[in-house]
Length: 186
Image (tube, rainbow, N blue to C red; front, top):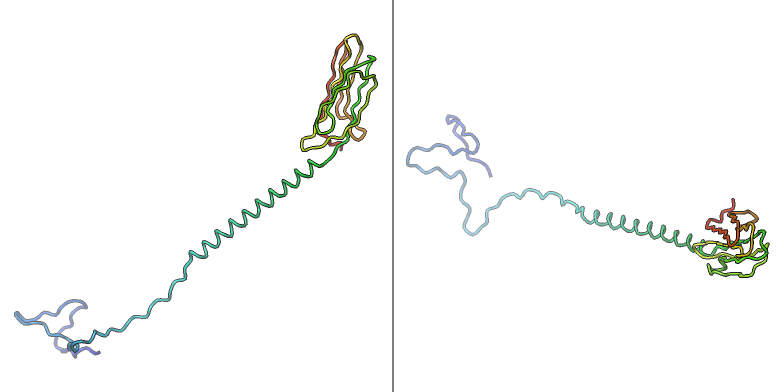
């Protein structure tokens, strides 16, 4: 489609403005009308390229991060559970030793599996070897002089030949108590 030729004598109108017509005249149509029944034919501008959707990639990244966090937490918890399991199965051989000037004593101590045991007519010196197991390992021994006994009474907790805890009490009915929960002898 071309534009009709313009008169060189007539000044050009700025773009978008209507040319002025003499009073009472209709402006002329610059183009011939389309035949009836046909749609106007305009040149279609080319379609812009479709934008790629970003949300699936963002969703995938979020899912990957959650999976990584879950796997990391599972590994940490699994490692902690394994460590706790190993510690609960670990056995420590503990030797209780009670010495003193009295002939008899009452001795209460933690036996295997954290059960309390008592020897009510123990003669001194007295020793007992027990194996301590479980997640929380505690060894305790309490030694008491008889009421007619005099002198000192001493308790000791020994692991791998090393005295970890020692306590002494003096007098009739005196009690010496020793407790140990850390069995690291290094």
